[in-house]
Amino acid sequence: MKKFTIIALIASIALMSACGPKDPGLKDAYKNYFKIGVAVTERNVADSLQAALILKEFNSVTAENCMKPGEIHPQAGVWNFEKADAIANFCREHGIKMRGHNLVWHSQFATWMFTKHDENGNPVVELDEKGDTVWVERPAFGRFGGFGGNPPAGFPGFGGQRPEGAQRPNGAARQAGAPGFPGAPAAPAAQVTRTPKYVQASKEEFYDSLRVHINTVVNRYKDVIYCWDVVNEAMSDANNPDAPYEDTFRKSQAYQLCGDEFIKNAFIWAHEADPNAGLFYNDYSAWTPAKRTYIYNMVKKLQSEGAPITGIGMQGHYNIFDNPTLEDFETAIKMYLELVDDLQITEFDIRINEEAGGGLQFSRGEGQVYTEEIQKQQEQKYADLFEIMRKYKKNISCVTFWNLSDRDSWLGANNYPLLFDSEYQRKPVYYTVRDFKKKK
Image (tube, rainbow, N blue to C red; front, side, top):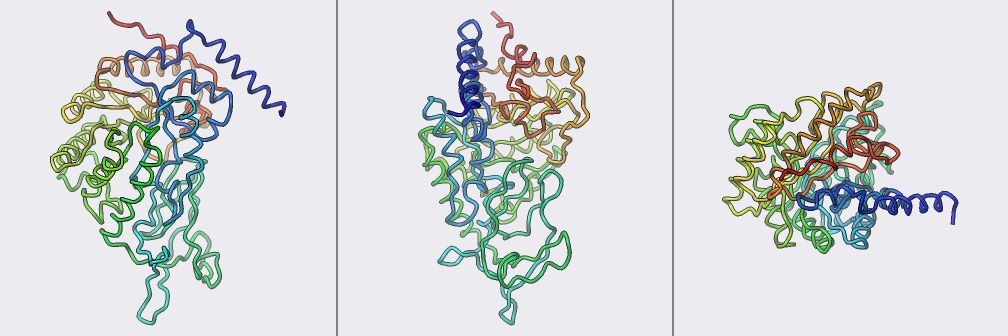
């Protein structure tokens, strides 16, 4: 056994031994309230020290990226189960249930579903009147932090934006004439690539692909996953609570092709695959007056049409300032409980800058200093939000931290968003969350 493996094993045993009944984990402190979850990668569960920390502190696990459609199903007929299986098998081995994340999302999506495929599963290239391939130019990938723009509609294999450091799914189908393959025309200039234009799938063809995807993934993990984020971030970021219903949706490829029907169908097919799973609509900034109104109206309408939406996930990408305000946070909870009995805070972190939500052009904290004043602000924000969540313990079933430690965070370690530091040690804010005073 390698030296570093022995050291890690000894450290993990020491951690588990030290954290006895007098030193409860988060899950123990909240056993009478709600599950305490964490988003992980396959690397977290493979490392003995990190695995011990997961087992000590949490009783719900979410795969951060590897179950997203573009990661697990990057091309027609191609499935990447290895990473998702590693996390699922860890949870099976240790008796931990999982949240499934996610089945439909405009980003990191299996965008090949929007392309027509032939009987052999190959994308169909659009031809001009002479029978030649139609080519399109697009900006090259590789902008800030790995957040390349979405490719043109119908370009298979890429799912849009993803957190920095996450791997892209496999590229476009290896087809003669595609860039980098025999017969491809040279890119006209740096930062621009030429790709074949593919025939777009019909709504029925898209639905056929999506239904197979949902059925395959849900059935593979139904023994270990107790709920799914069925549809993620389908609502607009427009800040107008009075916007007409049609204007409250993100104009994703799915919405442009299907309207809100794709949301309803995704929930129906997920329920068919696993009638016992909780089925969540999940979104960020779900506390704001505009977006909570959008979500409320969408869920109410689709439930009336037969969509089995049983829960709402409020992503918790917050900051130490006024995002969210405590009043608006509680107001959103009350609104959603008019529609569902089950709420979850699904992606919880509190960064120390003024950005928040799901926006991708964030600052990763270079040059920021975690001063004593900022630490106190963060502790107070965590304390205030958890106090409200405990108040609604009958309806909030899980609070999931988005990543294990500051080192793992999609926000960057210098935003100090989580309860464990970059060395996987408890920060003072950990004790603020764990050692709350129970009200009689």
